[in-house]
Image (tube, rainbow, N blue to C red):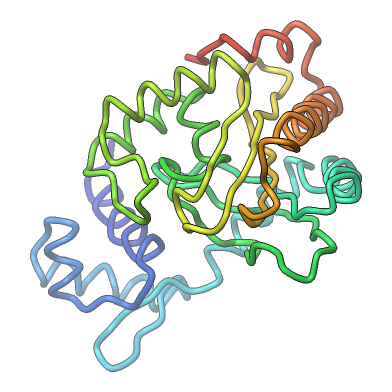
Amino acid sequence: MDKTIVKGMSVLETLVASPEPLGVSELARLVGLTKSNIHRYLQTFVALGYVSASNGRYAATLKIWQQGAQVIERLDLRRTIRPIMERLARATLETVHLALCEGANVIYVEKAEGVHSVRAFSEIGERAPAHCSATGKVFLAYHPTALQETLARPLRYYTPHTITDADALVAATEEVRASGIAINRGEWEVTVGGVAAPVWGPDDQIIAAMGLTLPLIRYTEENSATLIAQVRAAAAEASRALGASPQQIGAGKSRLVA
């Protein structure tokens, strides 16, 4: 493994994950490199168009998303699953997301909007912390690398409902594997809830998570079972469209992918 490339990628990934531009000193502290090394990497990324610089602070550019979007299109995920998401959105009247795993986070790569005037706001390309989002918990349950990366650092507190204890998060992932469904009730945003299920590929691997996002005022005990059934059915339909076998889809309630 080329250590120079690894260090450079750690700089770029830190910028991608940061909600605001960072200075050289901040990056050096976060990545664990000298300021001179950080500055050298930044100049290269700026020249390549992956990083922008303003007033001594640096931020990742949309070029990273553009590259990733090309990969997503090649996977044919969005084109295949979009009609299924739209049907789920029409059936539930709520917003539907398709998410991919990105370390300790998930990134929303497609969505179908709900019709309610009051709904959970989100954008394609937005990231969510895996430990307190429904789609994120799906990956934590079925993708051991995601769980390891999430537990490698303190679990950030967002609301009084956020899971910040490692043992509690592990227990939550076991519940997801037992049911095949992940639930979020105000863990990332206190007024927002979610229901999500895995989307499987033909190689016995989880490749995406499909999730329903809605204000908690519309996520009640009365409609919970119905929403769960609708999300489960849509995710299973998406898995079949991508070539997953009935055995793979049915085994998703208890299988941890290696």
